[in-house]
Image 1 (cartoon, rainbow, N blue to C red):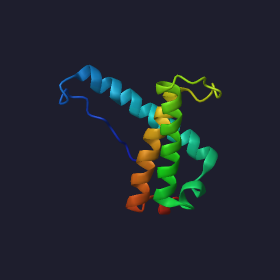
Image 2: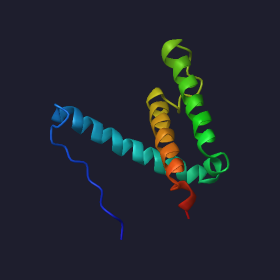
Image 3: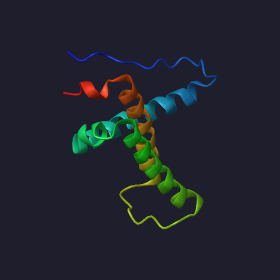
Length: 107
């Protein structure tokens, strides 16, 4: 049976509205992680560990720099700016999983 995880929206941040918006983004982030993980599996991260996540995160930062700062044409329209931000956030969390040893425990 799966464990249940909940986000407590209580206004502690000073804004219930922003907490709700953040919670919705966290759900999107998690769904993005699951979709991409199903495609790529654990091997692409396990092979290079934390350094691999850093390289992947840098790739996302470089993409955002070109699209947002330089206003370059998006030649991969299926990879939106929002999707790239979600990927970057996921790589940060994956790096933490690698550092904690959790990534090694993936079945």
